[in-house]
Length: 186
Ligand SMILES: C[S@@+](CC[C@H](N)C(=O)[O-])C[C@H]1O[C@@H](n2cnc3c(N)ncnc32)[C@H](O)[C@@H]1O
Image 1 (cartoon, rainbow, N blue to C red):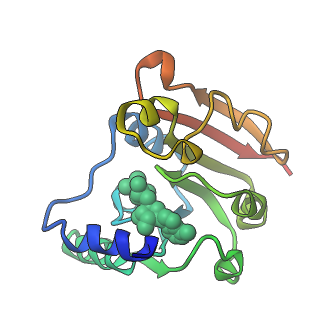
Image 2 (cartoon, rainbow, N blue to C red):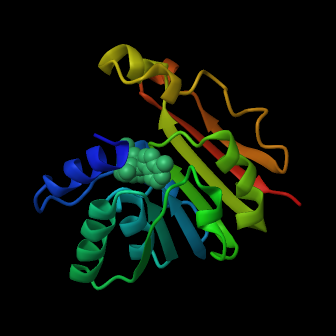
Image 3 (tube, helix red, strand yellow):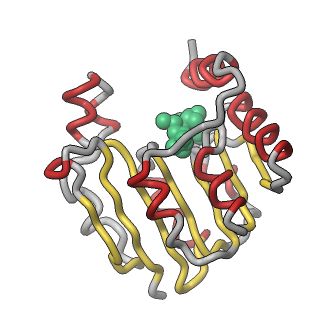
């Protein structure tokens, strides 16, 4: 079964339960300045729905069509408008034409180097980049693939066009998520 099929199957079997975010993520998302916001690997919209509810103009991308469908249904039932797109983030060209964003958020997904390189182009100068994904504690606790987990401080030197605004290493806090917030400088 392909990775897309696996995620589609997971979302198709989730029932009516609204997707939820851990508080460490939703608290940080609440601090982002309202604007045009891109949610990459959005799943069924846990972050996109929160951000749209806060007044962001959200474009949300995932390769799992079933996730996008669920997100659209939740958005509609809450009277929210989210532009959901089905696209594979391993094919960077699939993001062409989206324009630039005031905020980009990536939650519980580890971006590949190609995607990291493309982020500057997608981001307005002065915009915010929020990334929170799994660390080694998650691998130790759940067996989740270690190559998809962040090492401590992994992104501290990765984003040359961005200034670090906030970093939280989850491990000392007994959390399986690391958090980075950057601002695009130029
Ligand atoms: C752990 S879920 C996180 C979903 C959401 N960001 C959240 O925090 O609730 C990971 C998501 O990444 C998506 N994904 C994995 N590989 C992808 C790819 N190459 N392109 C687009 N989406 C992908 C999956 O479909 C899934 O929705």
